[in-house]
Length: 346
Ligand SMILES: [Zn+2]
Image 1 (cartoon, helix red, strand yellow):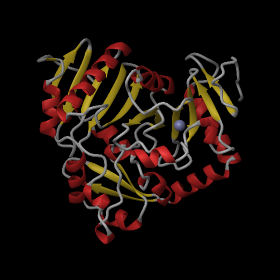
Image 2 (spheres, rainbow, N blue to C red):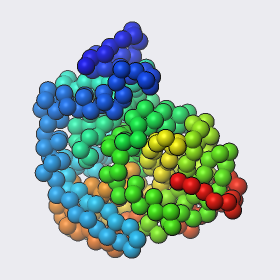
Image 3 (tube, rainbow, N blue to C red):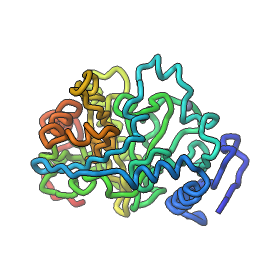
Image 4 (cartoon, rainbow, N blue to C red):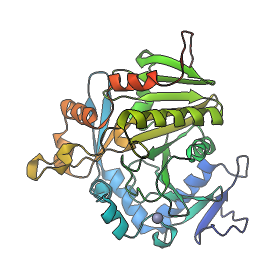
């Protein structure tokens, strides 16, 4: 299904297909599925990654009004154990730069600037990384539009997500998003329970509210117009920055889904990347490095001792330590939009 066209200089050497606009011969989802099927056959490293995922043990942990799934996945030690201080980042070759990708890796050339790649250490049964072709820092500044476009191009069966540079991105120096089939993170279902929605605000056709009782503060932004959703999200990010006194992009994770009625953003404002227990020595250490998937309720543990150690209380304590609580999210919501007393719809 190779569909190369155009002569853009950015096009990767191992280009499986190009995707430039909706309504082409194949949807982005179809191309991504076809790329994955092909790479599972012609890239042994990817085969190993999916074999590890198939063998991964999982546990369900239920808290008060929320639940998480814990996945024991030793291959994720590369990400969970990564040194992320600026000096370590500067000294390592960037694993997302096109010239450093594994020789077997092929790409879908996406809208002239991005590569859709199969993630070689998947945590979902279909896990893609979408990287910029250039080595640009991880940031949502001027990138929310393409993030929303990516969700729309993938379609309603997929979820795209973003790890802030200080909140779970293992390559904070290289702009990237991720994608997976929709509905695999428990929060995607939990946020559909409208009784957990609080404090509805309206801003320029966009509906904004927060959830309550999910163990960590979550802001939801919904709307049908790309520019309005982008503006509301930018506004929210600025407000998180003010509340956390962030000098640059505040710590956050974001999940985005697109359906017929428009976009839904699930935003997790963060206080901290890794919990203190991450840095302890010996048996007290907890090697959990929360990114978007973990905040979404899919907690990844590369080591068995952490997989077994987690309890509802411990998960709750980690969320309290690294994320906004409901009261802080309420303060955030107060900075956004107009209060609306009217009825709203999902
Ligand atoms: Zn790079």
